[in-house]
Image 1: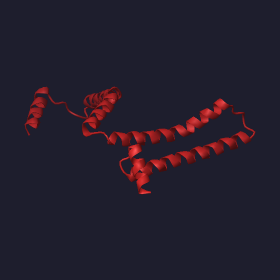
Image 2: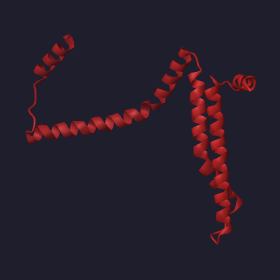
Image 3: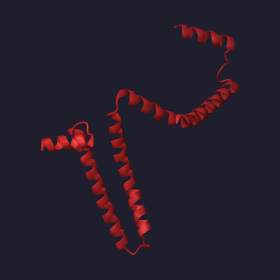
Image 4: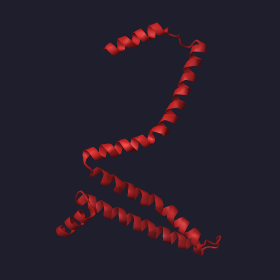
Length: 146
C-alpha cells in the first residue's frame, strides 16, 4: 500500500500522503455532489413542471458543479504554487497583486474623495479647527525625525 501511495504521489506531484489523500477526498466530494445533482434533476424532470431540454439540463449541471470544480481547481492551483521555488512564488504574487491595482486604485480614490468631503464639512461647520501649512509641515518634519 505504501509503495502505491508513494508512486501516486510522485506521478501526481503531491507534497506528501496527506496532500494525496486530500485530493482523493475532494474528488469523492465532487462525485457525490454530481450524483446528488443528477438525482435532483431527474426528480425535477419527473414532475409536471415546465419541460427541460438537453441545453437546460447541461446549463443546470454546469451551474451547480462549477463552484465545486472551481474550488477544487483553486485548491490544486494553490498547492501547485506552493511547490514553486521562493523566487517564482514571489514573482507570481507580484503578478497577482498587480492585477488588483486598477480595482484598488478606483476604490481608494473614492474613499479619499469621501474623506476629503467629510473633512471639509467638519471645517465649515466649525467642528474642527484648521492648522496652517507652516505648523502642519513643522509637525510632519518633527514626526519624521523620531
